[in-house]
Amino acid sequence: MVSASSVSLMVSASSPPLPKEAPLEGEYEEGPRREAKWWYSTFHTVTAMVGAGVLSLPYAIAYLGWYCFLFLVLSRMSLFESSFMSNQITWLA
Image (cartoon, rainbow, N blue to C red):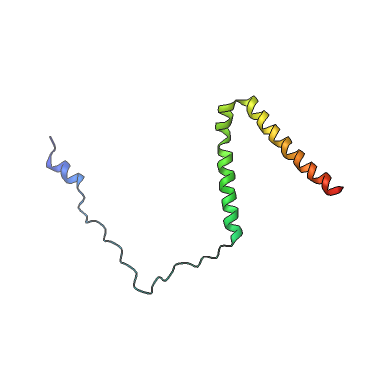
């Protein structure tokens, strides 16, 4: 059974906070000026994609195992390097 003294402890004696007043017209026009350049947006987009890729590496290792994961990483690296080297050789010729 709940006593009257425990009920009074659960109920706050103070009134709820008053709502904030709405700003007057013209007080806040558009907020702070945004001066972001296009390369800021590009940088943040690239870092978000790279971050998601890095965070998915543990899942890939767990799913594939170490040997398959290392094979895939090394094969992608050699594919990239071979295409890079072939472009350099055609550029030199």
